[in-house]
Length: 111
Image 1: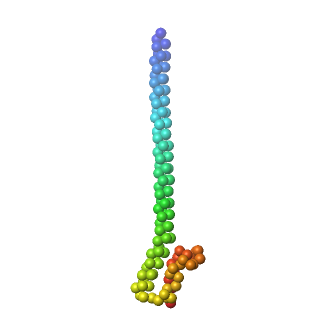
Image 2 (image 1 turned 30 degrees about the horizontal axis):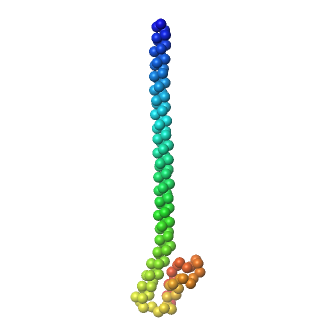
Image 3 (image 1 turned 90 degrees about the vertical axis):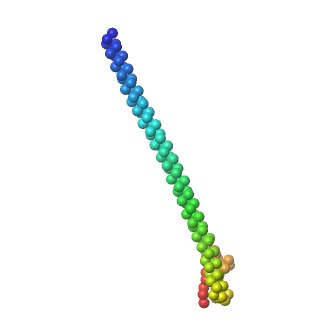
């Protein structure tokens, strides 16, 4: 009977150790899942940040492509009016009749 009781105690101890190991494995698995989830969230945040940065860069390019020629045209027209230059002194200030590559560029040629 003593031998059976010792085996039972050893079996209970073994099961307790096994339960601790299983609990540690479950904790490790939960930590791994949390790390994977946080990596996914971080990856998503990086992607959203990259999209936002691309949008800002695209907006910057559009503003430079559209507003800069308009501002330059107004500045040159203001200076032309300020110095009272003749119409034939300023050439191609309004570039609406120019071919495509030069259509959105402001030219001011002073004679």
